[in-house]
Amino acid sequence: MRSRLIDVLAAFNNVYSGWIWWNLFLAFIPLVLSFLLFRRKAIAQPWLWGFCGIVGFIGAIGFFPRYRHIVRAVGNVTQSVLAGEFSAQVTVFWLFSLCIIASMLSIWLYKRQRSFRTFLWWMGLVAFIAFLPNAPYLLTDVIHLIRGTSSGQIPVWVIAIVFIPLHATAILLGFEAYVISLLNQGYYLKQRGAERWIVPAELIMHSMSAIGIFLGRFIRLNSWDLVVDPGSVLVVAVNTLTARRPVAVIIVTFGILTVLYWIMKQITLGLRLRIRYARKGIHVLE
Image: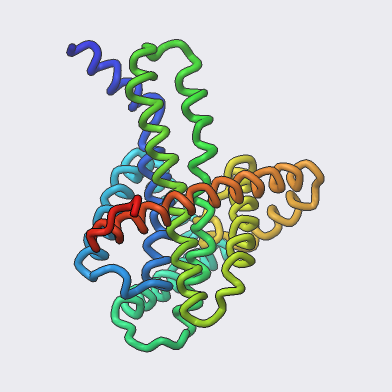
């Protein structure tokens, strides 16, 4: 029993290194933002704070294996600033400004009572769009399962009862976060008399998520790069997306997202309707 437990722990340390927790954390960020921006009154504040705490805990677990790289990167930037490099100074100033904006945004989102949109609301919307591709991005993380289990060093029983269920759960949670985020967006549009824009808005988000997934999986960009170096991200994105092969991959990804989203949307709405029936004492077959 002890040797089997050691096999499981060794596999997690060597193969995963916290990636699955970190990716789930990134997938839940747009979900939280969708409730704050689009359906603020749909969830009680204690539940919202509790969910934010859970998301933060997941992020902390995923961050732990990466802290050495981050500390090294921070040290390099600090040395560059002290050496008088202009680009490093601009980066630090940009990050400092974003921290102030993020703090103001957090306070405003939790305390706002007015219905009209402000500059900070639009900043929150930009963050929502930037982080949304992280949710369906987990669909591509099956690559980690293939790479991690193809070496033959992990016992088959560990793959069968640990890794495959873990991947399936992570992918399902990430994509469900994507579905609920877009449902909240659709609810917001419906409440403002723009119901006809729900499907077009979903298709736009699918296309943007397909682009984000390609840039993240093949170019290895992430949402944080938009914060740290937005200019380079824009240049890389334009250069990449003007090629024929990336466009083909993005179109296929868009189709997959559209089909999977429609299926999961029906399941999610069906479960919600069944829960509502159960609360009213109505049998689902009536």
